[in-house]
Image (tube, rainbow, N blue to C red; front, side, top):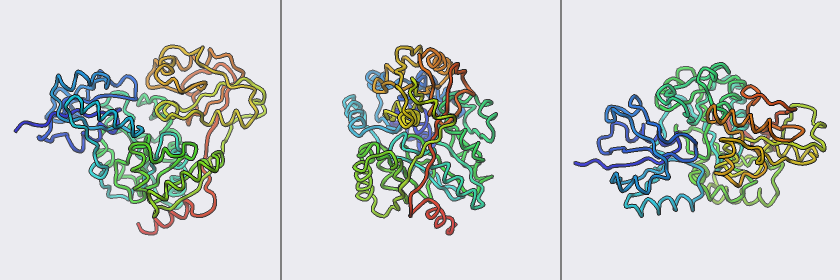
Length: 441
């Protein structure tokens, strides 16, 4: 019987995971290609034979999503499996309409069938949007569990932007491990703070193999989600972050709303800087979708590493986390908040000085505005980021990324790092939620 010819639409993460779990060595399907979106320089590569399995001795090509108009009919594709995240519902259905118009089915997979069961307890940290505050929440949860005497191993949502075969299973216990694996800025932003916090981090491509390795050294697995994607492992405690700076997005983005429905606990983050109307909207939507969830109210106070008086009256270049500004759609981050809080004279628009791949980023995401996204998916983009920062006419650079950029690039002007931390307000809080969870394991 003829196999269904399918294409998996992705962004070098969830798409590979869905393939590995549901389609690899499955003789009902012929996976003709992956298509790539959101992440630069993924298309034109091949998902390697060593990961693809015996049915694909030449691997599986990765094409640009822009080529689907001809690729689907030319290759007689029966179905497209949508496998990436942080998309507004209208865009998801526009993708569906486009795919359907070409004669193929458009498939959204249920989350449960792509969640592996661990032999160890799993705490998952997810969100309804990119940039909601997963990083500071994951750090807080990790710290609380370690202080309770548990060995916590973090497994991070995939970001395999290099040699996929070599990145099948990656373990990061030191900062030098990141150098050894040639990690991008985006990868370092997600791994470095865990390593500095005392946790081992696993990531890569093959999440069944990753789980087996992590289980060998963990009392508890901590899933650190990416974008607003679902966890790859079945959680025993499911924590979802919502953002009152973007009220309504918690019920308007795929698959973030699923995280809201499935959560055991919901952290309403950034209440110290959001307006009350936004907080009220988010809380009402949480209660309407998941009335049984424990709702935790949290602030995200800033830490500025340096003399904040140096910000007053100065021309400031604000460098922010890249994905938060691009497909996350945020209009500001930690650096902007610090500049405003400490009476900066002005925030300098970097676009007149942007070069190369950074200039391309502004063309692709024109809504970024006067902020500089710390994009660094490869050496060329990292070099262009350095050139752009050093060319901008400013007095001071505020860096709102989760890592110290000066470890990767040389900034030839005064600069300070800015970071968020999570502080819960009142009860219930994460200590109580985690205490109840650990009492049952």
